[in-house]
Amino acid sequence: MEVIFKSMEERDIEATLALCNKCFDEFNDYEYAKKVYIETMNDSNNIYINGVLDGKIIAHAKLTIIKTIYTPMASYGILNHVCVDPDYRRHHIASYLLDVLFKIAKDNNCKEVVLWSKNFRTAAHACYKKYGFELVEAGFFSKEV
Image (cartoon, rainbow, N blue to C red; front, side):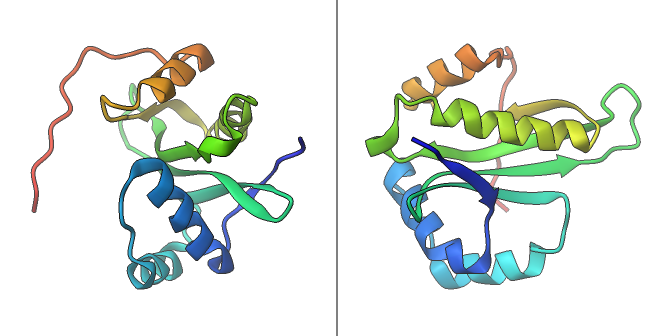
């Protein structure tokens, strides 16, 4: 099984959203996604990667590079929407996707990569731990604007 990992293109938005909707049981609006993608597609700090097998998008993640002026923190990456189509799991595709993302992070001088994952995604947590992520004992705070 040879999955090709590539930058998401505008023509991939609909299939990418369908995958995310399937994996995360969420509804992503196509018009909104297209608008944001077009606004950010030339921003080298917003990186969308898709895994493609036989022309079908079966994996996806977004990496955001955060550059800071703070020496201890330096630059770091935030991952979100890391997913593999349930029909293609257990083939190490997520690990290969993370390899691609970590190479990009390294090329951008990131000190670390962080992600957050909802509690119900226990299989994803096992994958992250196996890949070398550590669960940080910290609170994740959120407030709607």
